[in-house]
Length: 287
Ligand SMILES: C[S@@+](CC[C@H](N)C(=O)[O-])C[C@H]1O[C@@H](n2cnc3c(N)ncnc32)[C@H](O)[C@@H]1O
Image 1 (cartoon, rainbow, N blue to C red):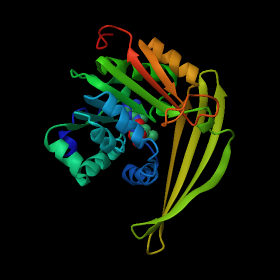
Image 2: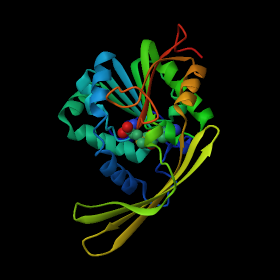
Image 3: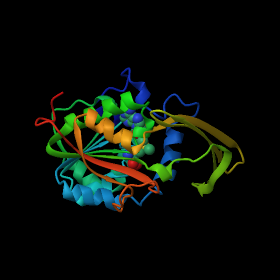
């Protein structure tokens, strides 16, 4: 499927949803580096496989990025997968991932995988889902108002017995102090040397932790030339209590809160905060 075949409009006003657009560096290069980093995250894959098995049916992955979770969710038994993201560059990579994976490719050939360019704060569809996922996305929203929009939008997408999973950093996963520009990692990839540095500035606010996260990636090519790719994001981490309160405001009843993908209870030592919620209204599609 080419970009033109995706539903959703690229030139809509909501460019705020494209976290790689508007950066000083080329979005497709940033997307490639994003994948190099995020594809190393595998500790949550079993969780997403299991939850797709438990809530079998159609799944919508809101803020799917390059589709890292697609394989596990399909393997878990998702009857249909819809991935929504605001970044065209990451969706291009999701397309490549589908193409490279025989199971995903076959499911797409059967019409069971769909990619949509859109804003998670306002997804409108006529179909309903057994499972909606917001994994690593809330941090990119601009605070409680946007989070409420995203949660309400997700709730409207759920089938009667549908479940929403919101997965974000827990208390112990958050940066405890500012970090000056420091080396994160170095690696060789495709004949190039990549050197990643980042800087973190944090600010406690009544609505949660605000983090300004800036990265600088040097791509050292075989001929010795260096491309320097800067990028920066404003991230937001609500406390678990604030996230649960927002879920209630979005007419979602919290069923469980976990502190890890192994389903440990949430406490101050938890690296993750995973909220599983169901619509409180009889007709979740309303409102
Ligand atoms: C940290 S990544 C997580 C990707 C994926 N869920 C995963 O777990 O691998 C956050 C994703 O949310 C997307 N995103 C952030 N804000 C968005 C918005 N308002 N609408 C759509 N996508 C958004 C970004 O483009 C990015 O792909």
